[in-house]
Length: 513
Image (cartoon, rainbow, N blue to C red):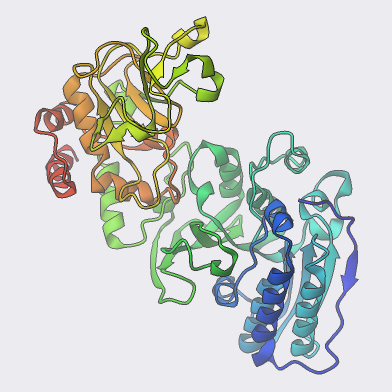
C-alpha cells in the first residue's frame, strides 16, 4: 500500500440534480471507469477489488438504520465509492427522515476523481440530507500512531467496507503500526477490520465483504480473538461460487459478507447463502454458540448454512475423542525442500530414503517413487537432515493444500512400512499423524484415513474453513471415534469409492456418538 498524506476534501453537489433512482447506475459507471484506469501492478500492490453494484446492494441491506436522526458512516479504502452509494440509495428509498454524513478514505490518486464524482452524485441525490467528505490518506497509518487523524479513529455509527487484500509481513510498516495500536493483523483486510472496530462508537455496526480465510487457522488467531471479543456477529452471508462476486476483476476467492455490533448481544446469528450476488438468498437463524463454540480455544467461526450442516455438526461434536484423547499427534512434514537441497535427489544415490510429496498420494495410499516434478529420494548429508526423517512405521498422511477441483478438502492416505521398509521423509506440504514421532498401529492408520476421507468429515470441515488449505491446527480441532472404532474401520477392506467410505463411517459415527 502506498502512504498518502491525509487531506480532507468536501464534496459538492452535481450541477444538475441526480435522481435517486439513477444513483446506482452512475456509481456503477464510475466503478467500471475507475477499474479500467487502474494500473495492474498498482492494483496488485494495493489489493484493490472494487465492489460491483449488485454485491454493494446486498452489503448495504445488512446494517440496521434508524428511522430518524443522523448517521456518521466511515468507508475506508472507498475505491470508487460504490458501497457509500448503495447505502445512500437505501437511505433515500427507506428513511425519509434520516440524514447521513460519509467519510470516505482512499489513497490511490487515480481513483480519487471517480470517488469524488460518485459522492457528488450522492450529495445531489440527497437533496440536503446527504453530506460527504473524501480523505486522501493511507487508512492504516491515518488510524494509528503519530499519523492518526482524529476524525478517522472513533465516533462512527457505521463502518462499511470492501478492504484491500494482501499479506503483511512482520516487518511491514502497516503491520507494525497496527501492533503499536495494541492489535495484530497478518493481512491488509484484517488490519482494516481491526481498525474499523476501534473506530466504532458503542453499539456501532461494522459491515464488510472479505475473504473467508480469517474464520479458522492459527494465522488469524490473534486478530480473530480481538474481533470476536469486541464485535458480536449479527449476520454472515456466504457465496457458493468463488468466481461471480468480483467477476470483472479476475478474483477467485471465497468471499463472505458479515455484519456485527460493537459490544452487542450474542443470542443468535443470521446465516444466509447464495450462489452469486444476483441469486436467490436462503436464510436461517441459529444460536450464537453454533457459530462460535464457547469451548473452542481457537475461536473458529463455523457456518452451518442448512439443517444438514447442523445435523452433521451435532454428530461430529458428540463424538467422544480428540486426537489428544487418542494419544495421536499431527504435525506438518519436516522437510522444507529449499532448506535441504543437498539432500534431495531425483534418482537414488545409493543410500537414500523415500521423500514423499503431496503428488505421491494416490487413491488412499502413497505411490513411491512416482514420476513427478519433485525429488523422490532424501539422502542426509548433514546432521540436521537426519533429524528430518521419521522411523519406519505406519503413518496417516493428509495434504495441506487441495486442488479446487478435488471433491474433498481433506485427502488422507496411508504410508505402509510393509511396502516401503525403513525410515521416510515427508515434505512440508503434508500433515502427518504419528505417536510421539513414531508410527501408528496399522489398523489405526488405515481407519484414520478412511475416517478423514468421509463426506461427514469433509462437510463438517467446510463449516469452518472456506479455503483449500488444511492446517494441522484444523485437524486437531476435529472430533474422532474411539481407537477401537478406528481400528474396526481399518481392519475392513479399504474402500475406494466415496459411497463405500461413507457407508462404513456412518455406522461407526452413529455408534460412537
